[in-house]
Image 1 (cartoon, rainbow, N blue to C red):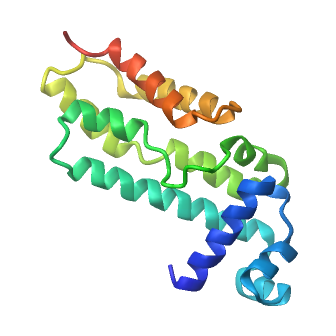
Image 2: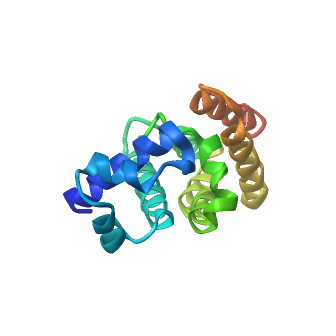
Image 3: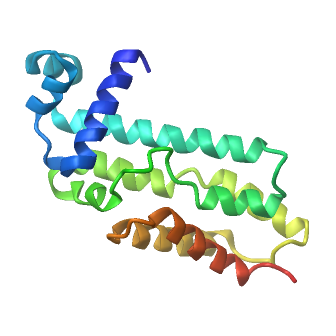
Length: 181
């Protein structure tokens, strides 16, 4: 992502945090110090800008997941827990506002939901490795995925300042039932 794209992502993200999906293109243009027309010519409509932000957020999560998996600080179980709880680097995003995109901006909303559901290959590999290492009970990863997605979606729709902490506590509680003692 070039520096201009990065700047517009930062601007749109700030406006999204402040106003949700109801921010105005005039606000983006003003913050970028360029004309609204230039934004439309270079980036298209507001839905395209929101899609760009969603992609940037989840690119950050993917980078975070890769770091966790490569780390030597954690055993396989802790890596699995940490990637299951991974939140974007952007701590101030109100995910309740992201869920509000559904009606007005279905494409970025669908991409947002798809990102939450995708990228389970890394989880599945670690899950199976934990079973092999005798760290967790034999269990169906697809059922695990359904439970975790349900928890994640529930936490993201709550109006709670501590979403990240709540997600981690919930995930660790699920693992309490899986860990072999």
